[in-house]
Length: 323
Image (cartoon, rainbow, N blue to C red; front, side, top):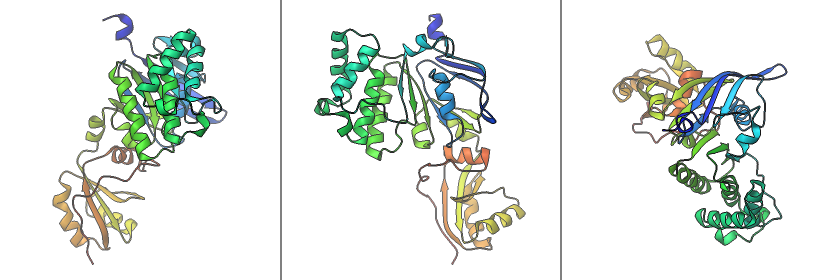
């Protein structure tokens, strides 16, 4: 294996970023392997976009170092930009140009010859299922179509590394599914993906996930490794008075967390303890759910609050209530 193949695709050491009195990043140490899909998961304001922007050469760190494909993201920005593709939160298409011309123009920006840029545009239109809208002005596309064109633009120069910053924000379920299918296809060809999201279902397919909160990485591992940190199954109760229920549970040796979802308990065998709790709680239980830990549960356990914007949890396997 060559040295470049063995080295990390991304690496940060002691990374800090300050905006005046705001300390957005607080000592980020991170390493992303080549060929992996890596997700940075956290609520809005956690520091995701700041870290993304430093790695993508758009911001300079206040302290520490970030290396992308072996290059310093602050001092060797040109070398980094020649090797990456980016899809931002906000659309960056030329609205009055056709889809085909958007791709062609991006190819020229990356230094492709006119012939190579046109050939690459045709290839991506076919690969991403955009041939039917190739001649349409970008501003007349649907949200899902625009996102696929954004992805095509990012892939024009066949980048070694693809950055995605909240790339499916505002898309419906079908459009998001199509977008991620194309991203997984890119990873299957050996590409590396670094994505930010606050949707746990988007982070779930990643090889590894870093949970970020208040500018710090609070957990890192595969989805399975992170879920194992919860230490059991999840019992979620929705009652007439969650605060009173939590107080009673603490008094009886449990360790509940209260969120907008209800009262959450981590138990080795949650289905076993559920009947006794339903019979003994001093408040009425309107809904009870038992499920395997999710990334939402991991974040709640580590921080005491839920991820913003996360979809509803899994369907319940047990339910009941006391009248």
